[in-house]
Length: 92
Image (cartoon, rainbow, N blue to C red; front, side, top):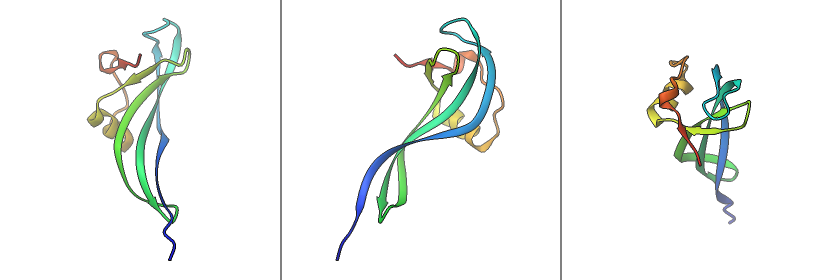
C-alpha cells in the first residue's frame, strides 16, 4: 500500500486593492493583500492548514508589510475595505 503525503507552503492572493501613497518610497501606488500558509496533503489533497500569515504588498516599489491576523481574516471575508497606514508593519 502506498501513501503519498507531503507538507508544503503556499501563497494565496486575496481580493483586496487600496490606493495609497506608499510609506516606503512616497509614490502613489496600490496595496494588494495575500496570505501564506503551510498545509499537509495526502494523495495531493490538502487536508489541513496552519501557520497562516497575512501580508500587504505595495505595487509601486514591491515593499512588504505584515498585518494583524484578525485584520487579515476580516479582509479575506470581505468585511474590511480600507486599511490605515498605522496597521502596516514593514518586513525587513
